[in-house]
Amino acid sequence: MESLNSRVRLAWVVGALVPGAVILAVGIVAGRIGAPVPPAAAAGVALLIVVLGVAAAFVRYRVWRFEVRDDSLYLVRGVLTRVDTSVPYVRVQHVDTRRGPVERTLGLASVVVYTAGSRGADITIPGLTPARASDLRERLRELATESEFDAV
Image (tube, rainbow, N blue to C red; front, side, top):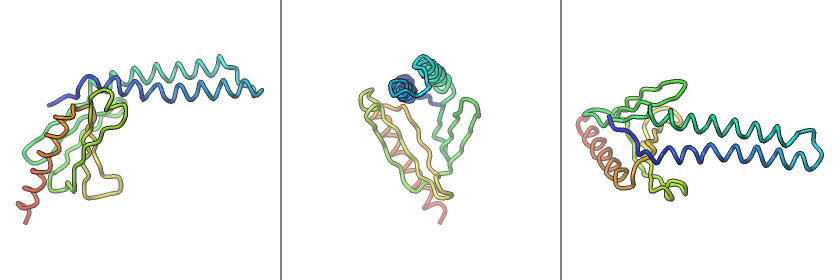
């Protein structure tokens, strides 16, 4: 099974810093306008969120794996709840690559696989190099097209 690029941990750490910074800012502003929120309490909560987010990023990286199989895309992920997903190619509707600002800065990309089925039926594979993401997108598109013809 293939793992993600190690730089994805940094992207996930940045994702953990954002809520911590927001909580800290809200705590400081609330303290300045006279609300009964001590800035030290807000800083403590913010620090706890950041520490938990950083730890989760490293554990999440160790768990996250995917494999392009003959008949399906197989993924393993999850920190507290382990999720094993098998996406048959015949269910794939379309495949995109996505690069947000943090991913672009780190030289990463994600592949998003949209499937037929229930609402929100999409799978994202984060932490790929742009070249790997493009290759994977095209490979999944080819496999989905082939499986569509095989099903007819």
